[in-house]
Image 1 (spheres, rainbow, N blue to C red):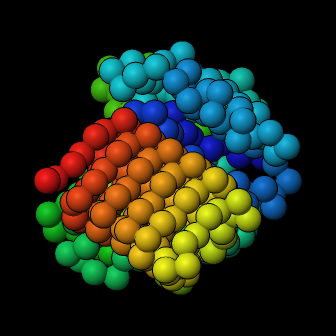
Image 2 (cartoon, rainbow, N blue to C red):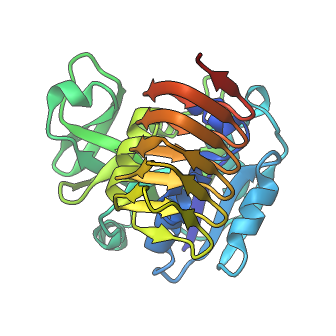
Image 3 (cartoon, rainbow, N blue to C red):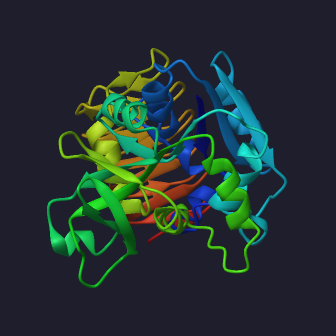
Amino acid sequence: MKTIIMAGGYATRLWPITKTKAKPLLPIGTKKIVDVVYEKVSKFDAEILLSTNKRFEEDFRKWAEGKNVKIIVENTTREEEKLGAVRALAQIVENIEDDFLVIAGDNIFSFDLDPLIELFNSKKKPVTALYDVGDFELAKRYGVAEIEGGIVKKFYEKPERPPSTLAGIAIYVFPSEVAEILQEYVGSNEISDNLGDFLSHLCQTMDVYGYAFSNGNWYDVGNPDSYIEAFKFYTDSYVDENVEIAKAAKIIEPVVIEKDVVIRGRSIIGPYAFIGEGCEIDSSDVSESVVFSKTVLKKVRLWRSIIDDDCEIRNIELSGSIIGGHARIQRG
């Protein structure tokens, strides 16, 4: 079996942060989002392939150092050029003769995938992972499966009247023969680049089984708010030994504070804060927020926000904000 991690998107709903950072490489505590995926799949005896684009190729190659991962690069550098998940997957599996596990690189979940693999090994048919969100109103936000006798009959994308509360979570196990069906699908005139739509197409060709996870946690990191929620769940605590913290400052764990950070005045950092390398925090409160490297905060109250690299922000309160790199914001 091959394992394919899909990480070729441009995450436009998290712009401007993800204009310069791949979403799977965003931090959750001391780890990256894709680290969660890698830890879940590396336990299986399978070659791991990660598909990305030219813009983020070097970032993923750096991440993959020392890991059992082969990087595959599609020749795109911006949203308008991207292949989409279906075309990218079709290119990867064109010359693969093995069964293959496919998983989105920005998937954050706490459960193990062993039951999914076991179901596939017993059926030797396509299997898709589902997560029971437990609420029909919430299910309207996702692709939802209609299930009968454990077999997926159809997927509905953000349905007004969901047939179930079982959301598709972009984890699939396919037998080798699906590679040929995928090539035919890509060659059709009505191709959709949504893997859920391909799965609905596959349901018309063969039995597709669904495995529903109801324990543990799953996060769809599609917007800043969901990213912060995932960050809060997974973050651990780490303060680099080269961090300078004033006596009057207060650190409320869990926090991650990288090297060469200076925290001055009566600052309060945490809980649930990430402070990137080389930041300067002066007389500021930062909680439930991610602040990337070399940013200066002075007399700032920051809550549930994401601040990109090399910003300078003074004398302001920010809540639910996302600030792009090199911004200069000052009130008064």
